[in-house]
Length: 220
Image (cartoon, rainbow, N blue to C red; front, top):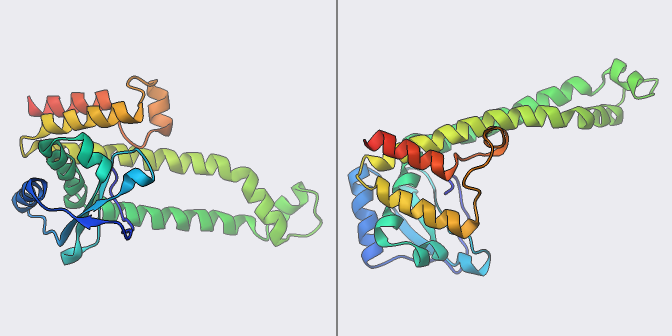
């Protein structure tokens, strides 16, 4: 599940019925004001089941992929949405936006150190500092810089996922979220037991087993 901003496509439609009533009931309990709940015809683009919300203040909207609606029970859908609401209540979206802006600023600052750098230009065979040589030098060294920033961002993202799971458990639907995560994991063919170093280096989300263990530890 993603927390962030989405684009409404022309084939989105409003959600009605039992699923909507259950979601609105949860949102009311969580103190989360909803403007509308939409279903995206995501099956035309992907088999991935997902959900997200968009907007701020009184214009918040929840969007469900139709693949999610087809694969999960009402209780599981509510649990997934509770997880997304948890991201909002914990201010993860705001923090992620601020972190993205900060990361961009850091990258541009580092780039500015390379532009017009005489020593770098000489190392690349130039006689004078130039914009083009600065870009080439930055391109060579950007990969390790990007990897370092990625490690920090992934660490924060995994922490946010745990916090959103904990928020879901407060409404006694932790087991429903676990069931939903299992179904989504099977559908996406996720690796259930990747090497810890791979998780540390590349994963923006904890593994399924890590999330299940954490939720059941908190619920016990």
